[in-house]
Amino acid sequence: MTEEYILSAAEKRALKDEQSEMEHAIREAESGVGAGTKRNVDVDYLRKKAAQIGAAVERGTPKNLEGSVKDKMARESKELSEQIREGMPSMDEMRRPEKHPGAIEKHMHWEKRNYDKIMRLKQINRQLNPDDPTSGNIERLRRER
Image (cartoon, rainbow, N blue to C red; front, side, top):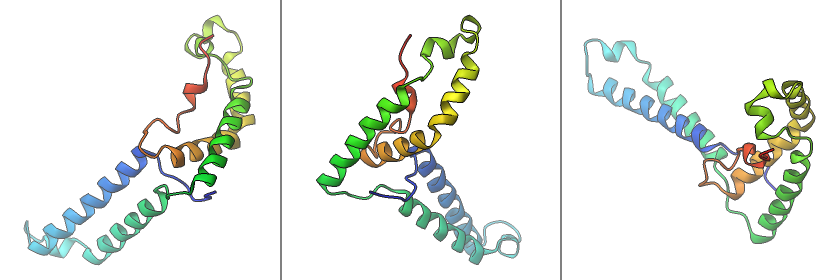
């Protein structure tokens, strides 16, 4: 199983956008666009940062796993989902806390107790479903009432 942090789709997109902006600034500086552009831009620094971002995206992209490892992760995901769901405030409690005294405190205690499990579940689901932008969302575990 992987111990690397798997980026969410939004995190990956933001990093790629940042890298693209840096590469664009490098191209502009090298072509001399704008008065004094070359003087005010540290191109070497931008290249280094763009490379670091590219490496971070590569590290945070899910790797291809063999079937037995995926099966093991899927079992762990199912077990964690069941454990996390225990004591999880319902959607109704979260939407209308005024009708459920103590719902906010209940949620805070639940989240604190399950933080490590939630983070692990998010990473497993991002690894198993890399193309699903909601794969790390635990709200889908929450029951209606």
